[in-house]
Length: 550
Image 1 (cartoon, rainbow, N blue to C red):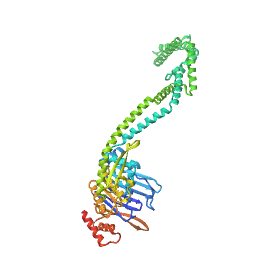
Image 2: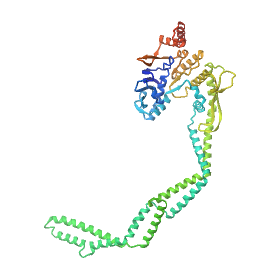
Image 3: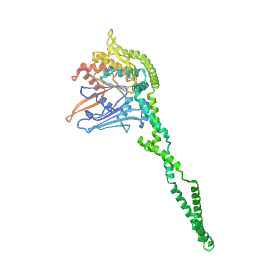
Image 4: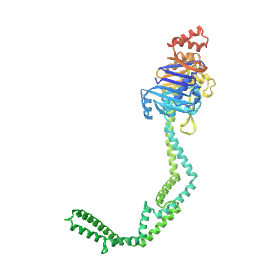
């Protein structure tokens, strides 16, 4: 079992509802307009359906829908992957207020509608009363066959995108060869100018520093010489004065112990002064005026500045500009290399074709098996001699989904020519075909709860009884919930829920309650004969239940 409980607050015409659901096959019945589809609408909302303020009960400020599901391995994996806590049960909740604001939770943690839809696909499989309409769409038909064939079209879709991208690149390159050539020539010429300069990383800063030293070399030499003279070369230099002071204090250390500390300080200072003198002498020996080097620096910096102005860049950015142009040239060469682009397109096409052929083979194998299975289901639904055909035809052009279009054809009775589903005139036939497909393909998904919303419309008599038995059979390994107006279907159910509408304080409210024993007989009798309870309908209702052993 998957769906265990559903709770509604102020949903459409339901004030409050707390309903527990059982295993097997459950039917939901009631008078026309009582709100039989409300539960299904609520389940669609709580599994990520479109939020609409119209579902809020008149006079209420918001609607609140909760559904509790049994945990399965697939759900456990999904919760772990999505970052939600895994508990004993899965609780989905959704609220909508009158301002249109929607909020959602998964097991107490805030969630998005997209996340609700994602997990909902693992929980519920809903077949509506107009399910046959999707059978007229080529994409829906193809997806159904692919699900039956157990193939995944993700890979072929990616290969198709890759092939189309390669095709577009080749087409664009062929159409723009002249402009690409002009752009390449422009880039090549610009790069040639910068390559003559050959700017190195951080060179501009090094040039500036060296140029500053050389252009001020004489002033620097004069400053160094003046400092040296003051420190050591004058008769009254700083070094000689500090040396005399240190000697004077050292002579009196035996009398005044404090002088010892002072003399040590002066000795240290004298050593530092002597280091400075050494450094200055070395600087004066190594440094000289170099007008030729200064002229060379002026010329190089002038070229650097000229190119920076021409290309509207800061001088320090020229090295990066040259690198970016080289990268652009590589991209241009790639974009204009028709041979390479043709090879890339051919390779992408070959990869797509290989995958498409595998997909075609899988579809070709699955199509007759699916057709045979649905044909067999049709026989029990009052379409004896009818045939179902899955036809594969080459598509007009390669598609993301492969190389063929898929269509469903039906022959309603023996001897008739199969025609497209949308050409079958009878509404009852359409419903039965959709039901046959739903029953045949119900095992394809992972959802443990199957919901049928009046898919038996247009069906009656013995066929209706067959429908009921089919749903009961499905309920042996899955939870099945069906909204029906047919007493034959209702009689086959393991559990019977009745929707009733009543007037409460001038407001129309709907309620859902489980019925059994005599109440269930009464409901079946109502479905058989209307509001007037006749002995014959009551007897017929009892017979129907007894025949099904319910």
